[in-house]
Length: 122
Length: 106
Image (cartoon, rainbow over all chains, first blue to last red; front, side, top):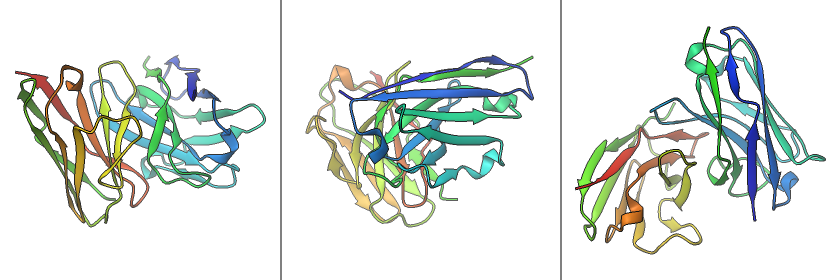
């Protein structure tokens, strides 16, 4: 059974940093691209970042302007999102998601974690 | 960036009704469109990809159609478990979601 479990969310002050983790199990982690998608309270879904199975290629939403960094440790079956210079508008539930197709992102997702809430507020 | 626009934003329907949700892309995305269902407090669930391919395990009352810029999600006979918010997503260029359509009980 595929499982994705996010952690690391919480309350952070504007300008602060946070690192999210997503522990994966039930599939060959290194064979699939992975993605972060966020959802602001009461709002829709926004694609944030993706990474290829080998970690060789990373992709980001233009709106992030270099503040976020996606990475993965295939030996630990874990996906990460390092978030710096956080702003109030980054407040959201952050989901990790498994790419449907394979090593390189196809940008649609067949399994999602339960999400972790990031709140940016003073 | 490709923009996705869903209509309606919300609808009220009864169990057994046929329900249709429309999604329009700001430019052609061929058939690279997915539909997701999301219930309150839960993660989205993939229903359909490649515009009309049903994901494994999804009931056959769900169907998708369209290509280019206009797409539809149809639920042939609405069931109690189907009251949720539905999102379309283009994956022709990265991934962009529609704003969602909330299906409520009439």
